[in-house]
Length: 394
Ligand code: AMP
Image 1: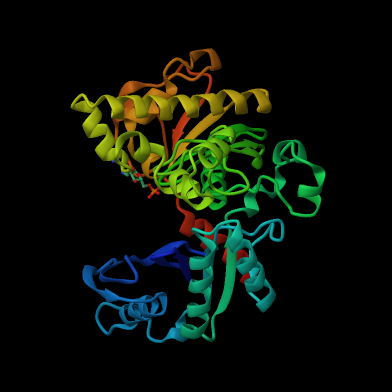
Image 2: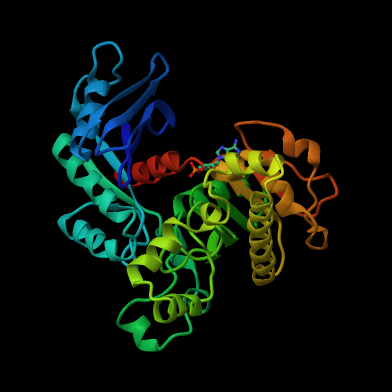
């Protein structure tokens, strides 16, 4: 069965076809800069690799371009849109309504729309992708996989904020968690690799967005992002943890509007706010040249991760493994080195040579005496979505 996975963002559509249950990759691609004259379409199969720049105004136009390629007589991989039996959609925020992968109905779409207030950067694009896919693949089943679902096991003592009960009871203000498909995928891989019946793992997802999850016996028990994807670690453009008193000071004393504060904390903070760059490759290169802001930002970034490792190891009452994943976690040996430095008290000891080796598969980068395994595991959110979707429809 061909499963088409769509990860539709505010200005991009990432797609992949995976043949299930063999988990065979068929094709993948990405349309970026939707809404602009110079949108970029990347497409790859085992026989073809292409990139074209053209005007793509809407998600609908973007998905039609993708379908044109999928059906193309030479470069294509399907004969008709009916060959796609099921479309799996990544949806960032499912609130408290969805703890599992769910077939999409009118009510489900309504809920995704409602939760856009909680994930304004993500849910509107996710919903747009669903609406367009329903039109383009009318005979396919449409299924939603929620980033928040994996975190539904977080107990109340960890997911509640110490604010008046009424805000939880009536307004559902609580920690929801994000990057769930990624944390679930890499932690399942780690558990299989470790071969442990009972396991205490910390998963560290470091990409454009960054988050950490404490995972006890395969279940999420705490997580660094919260009510919205803004808490916790220092991210590309998001601040992560700050004292909320800063917000009142900005508004009441320095006369920023609430929207301006949101703009600052969401798009102008994090590594970008500290250095002027948001891509870690640029920051590492600048730090190497002696740029003090970049050097400090790297130290701050790693220090924040260390604090969360300490906190989660305490709540798990021990630690078997930490996992590095996503763009930065998989590729930046420098961040891994800074994070693992001075963590021998917790039994985390990095092997510098193994840390520098490059590989696209799961690898251990700890020394032989390290009590805690340090794992680098490439995430594959699309495959996790395909697996969950296939389980639901098979
Ligand atoms: P993701 O959101 O998982 O696609 O991660 C994207 C981020 O990963 C980029 O913004 C970069 O900061 C970072 N990244 C990707 N490749 C490297 C690399 N080789 N070294 C350091 N950072 C990287």
